[in-house]
Length: 190
Image (cartoon, rainbow, N blue to C red):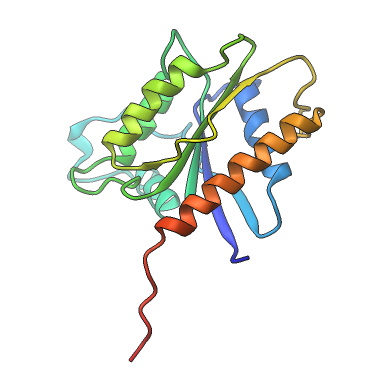
């Protein structure tokens, strides 16, 4: 298998985020040949069109980190039936300046965890709408609504339930399959 680099954004900047643990769990269960790496958002300033003519370096680095991946995960908590403001801010940075959206044609999967029975389903629906507007190639299935129970993810991301670990591997494999299907054709040199 060709090596794939999958970036991930954690939509929470909380030091105790269970979604960060979920992201670490994705790293731990990734199949051979697949590397996951975080694309951090906590240092991004609030987006304003005033920056469009002169992007701060942190935003340029953020956009490049997305563009340098083969695919992306967006790991999101749900705040008030939607996505956290810090995540929306990061996504706004990724889409600017106009015509230079970093998620354009980027295979992207959405996943999240919460203690509730429907996990982050409502927030993920909003997130999918935003990503589709940015022309991301959003993975349809499987959907990643993970109900977090005490001890499901250890601090280092170890998954204590093999069924959950198998599901996480399956969503990574589905994202890699999407990346393979949508990769630009290689044109032989003449």
